[in-house]
Image (cartoon, rainbow, N blue to C red):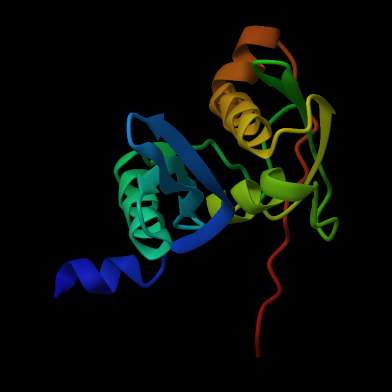
Length: 171
């Protein structure tokens, strides 16, 4: 029962469903492949491919694998601490921190990945191949490159321009 309560906060999104065929001796075997992104919207996100002969089973397998492959993302005040470039294959994704109120400015699977991770303000641009699976992998690669703000400031010897979010006091 505790596991179900934890899973309520997890955002699960199906990005792509493909029909794949395998040629065998007797003809062709039909199967489905589902690309799924899951995240707790609090700095943890994962992605996976689920494969099965039926679509719902492929989606369930993908979601289960994505939850097992959760990775921690460094988020500071709803954005990333510094500009990063993520690469995977021919896909490249440039991500820049943004001021509060900007929102998630990104396209396709990158937007879903960033929202599932819990990033509130960011500007991202996909460069190169437009394959949504490779773009999501490149974006996660870039997010994993984000360093801790304090360590980065010490390493560079100066303060970085990360915009502080001022929370409104409810009265």
